[in-house]
Image (cartoon, rainbow, N blue to C red; front, side, top):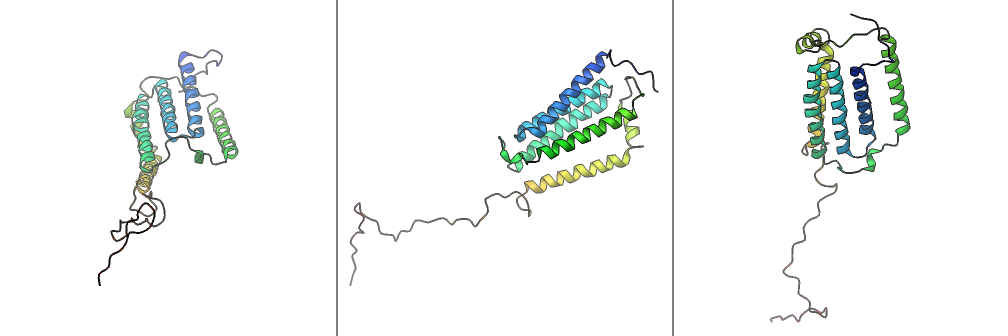
Length: 213
């Protein structure tokens, strides 16, 4: 049920905390896509997910906040780190992470952000729902997910399953297209020591050979 929209010039403590968490989430998300170290990107992703969980807590969605921490921070990031280790990706600074399309990606990101912000502000300009404790409980969210949003929920499950299968394929070496265990090219055979090779003296001349008649 909508109420009168409060003044933006006098924000409450919850709104200030929410804005600070949003700034942390946006800043860490930018660091995820701009850093050249994969491990640092995963750690900044943890910070981003943690800020999102804090935003859910401010909005009294406790169940969503703990799911965010347990699944995304505790599972997805760990899966990403294991994927980095299993695929033998470079751990340190890597110049290969710069695709050279920074300008195009920045334009697309800014255009997407402007579109989303414009749609949200235009659609909910006069709507205001005060954060009431209890609306983020598991019972209400479960009834909403499995009654109204069941199709997107199942589609997301299939997407996560496809990502898991892809990570397994990349980490296996006995599957065509998997990570190679050794560089390309035929293996170099070992050079066994030949006992028939005559020893040479210090001067470089072979020793005298004795032959029988």
